[in-house]
Length: 347
Image 1 (tube, helix red, strand yellow):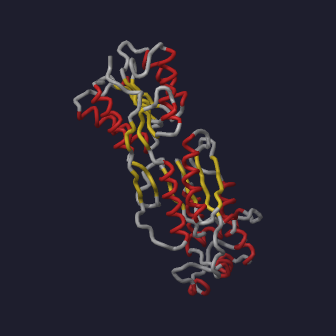
Image 2 (image 1 turned 180 degrees about the vertical axis):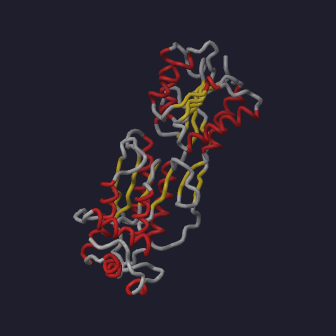
Image 3 (image 1 turned 135 degrees about the vertical axis):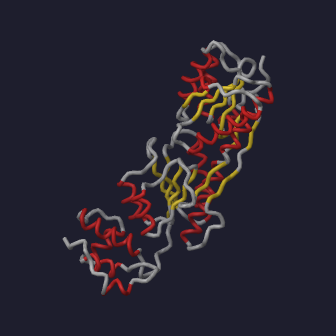
């Protein structure tokens, strides 16, 4: 194993701003070109210490391919889970653009997690896709460095936290959506408006909650902490919190659920309590997934253009993979309130 201390003369003098070649990286690390090639291509048969040394040199100097890379044939999608219509809308958006560019789509489910594991990054480095679209998730800092060193771009969709301008991202106007949903209920005459949120660490949930509070504040309606319940964007959260809210001495006359799944859980809670929607309880969701229009009654909800968000992210990936600058590094699409039969004036 060579010593990590390396001379900065010799081969490093030839490293330009576009990065080092495999041969230069091999000489700097004191290993064979074949070993560097295995690290670059994500192959497993390299000692951990040697891999770490090569990765360090790649981070320091970059990596320049000596030949033009063969045209990528894949785009990667990483998503927290495939369950439900949310994932299907995302897949449709990516597939629509990928097919236009003759790219296949590789799907990775994180089973509820929000960062992929090591086996994922090894596979990506081997497959060499045009880029990676991550939805409600994102690579770890170490994985980000590995992707950048190989020239594999990634774009965040519906990011978990504020991505700033470090990475390209596509989001939606969650604050405006929360504002319009709550304002709609206020205009109908509701004053006891509950909110069933998503997880507190999720950027989208925090923004929707801020919009909810802003609408109440503008209407002069105090925020009642007993009416705010934290969920995890799941149907069972709407059911559990809906039951608890409806058991209050002064229950809400309306519920703003932060996604459609939670809203359908509230539907079930209302049914169990012998309440009718919207006569006894108004309900608003968020997403406008296909089941919203077929529910009974049809769900009033905030339309989040998930398919368009995924399609936009895929276009960004393709542009970056072709060396083109992005017109926008952070793209925000608009939301729109869709009024159906689940909301009415309170009794």
